[in-house]
Amino acid sequence: MWILTTIIISLLIIFIMHQLWDYLKDKYSVKKTKDLVSSQIQKYKTILEEIQSNHSIPDKKEEPDSIDLKNDLEVFLQELQDGNGNGNKGGQTE
Image (cartoon, rainbow, N blue to C red; front, side):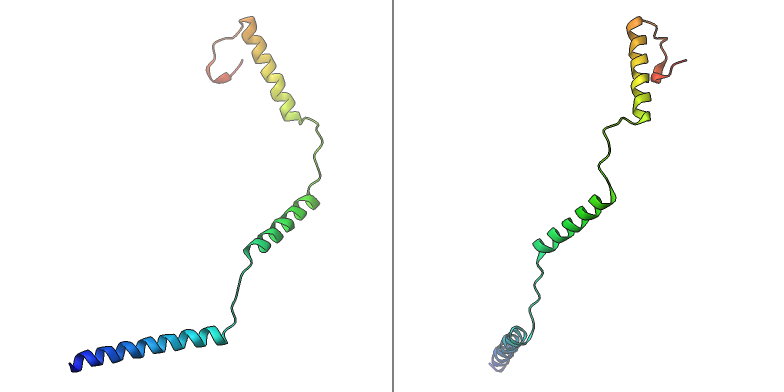
C-alpha cells in the first residue's frame, strides 16, 4: 500500500509541475510566429526585380550558331533527298 501511495503522489507532483511549467511558459514568453507567405512573396519580388534590372529582353535575331546549324541541316537533308548519302554513321560527312 505504501508503494502505491508513493507512485500516486509522484505522478501527481509530476503532473502539477508540468501544468505549472506550461502555464508559466505561455504567460511569460513571447510567441514567435513566422509569416511564410509574405516572406516568400517578398523574396520572389526581390528576385524578379534583380532579374529584370540585370537582363534586357533579347532581340529576336538568330544567333550565328543556330544559322550554321540550320544550314548544315538543310545540306544534310538535301543530300538525303538526292541520294548522295555516303552511308557514314553518326552524321559525319566528308
